[in-house]
Image (tube, rainbow, N blue to C red; front, side, top):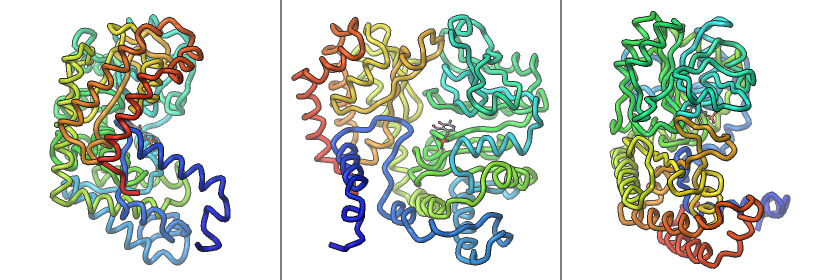
Length: 451
Ligand SMILES: Cc1ncc(COP(=O)(O)O)c(C=O)c1O
């Protein structure tokens, strides 16, 4: 044992890391925005690159000693170009520290304060960084056909810009392009955004492009969730259609934490300045190395099989849940995520998500289209298949997961009226929940994570 090992130097932190590894190993993460990275990606992230400061861009740094960092960033950009099949006149930024920063950097680059951006309404599946603000009581907002923001300007983008949000169709919960077009014509935004966290269907990027053109707006597609599926060619790509594409690297793309921005070359130098100095100082070079390794993996033929399997698994899980009477928003999914309205089961998102977690099935509580409940206790749950697919699980395991979810719901339905603290106590005492947790643990052992 080495003297300077973490467990000797700081046993408290070391113990927490071990507990977290055990939690990840013994439970199934069905959170659609999570994944598990390869040993090579993790080695790159934990490497000596973390020590280096390199503010600036390739060959133009404000710090000495960046000859290898320049090479690394060049390689990462060239892999991103190949993977996302970039047109000749597009370029790449890999320095934004996270997806939210990437989006903000784009806004800083192309909008003036008080300009109008148009994005998807958050409770319908949009993202906070697309201009979110709210009212304490959202009941009236749920009924309006367009959302013009609330007094609580929670995301900085809602303080800087005028935000208009389109909603999904109230009956089908799908994008209604005619409706989006009408709103665009009424509000004349400078920027139109698609993408989000809980919309289970693919987006028609060409239709969105036409809408943007009709009002002379720029069009940004945020593909944070779908990046791996789009890279693998199993979902439509907005590259070459939108003006800018932003993404996180740690979801379906499985490349460690960070973000990538793809944009037409005439926008990229403005966007680079939006990232630095607009928003941040030195890039996290170790994370860029993780992204580079992850992109290298995504360029291999087996990544396409992985991406296909994510979707197959999501289809099987969705269809099993449908058979068990779960109310799937939009009737199913085109990608890796499923949104379920729990109202017909008589138990809502917060209670369901906590019970599932106790049973070893980790998923999110979530808002849904037409939501009238609080985001802290919403109507729906959200789940997805990227991480269970990384573990090697296929169709038979998806059937097991659906059956476990059904059993959990049947156990908790009689407890729906309890206060949350009492509900949790009952969960902790439930023998049936413990039995399911053990069964899940058994399955996890057959599909271990390679720590
Ligand atoms: C659509 C979308 N955009 C942006 C982000 C923000 O990414 P980050 O958490 O890295 O800031 C997310 C993360 O969930 C997302 O789903």
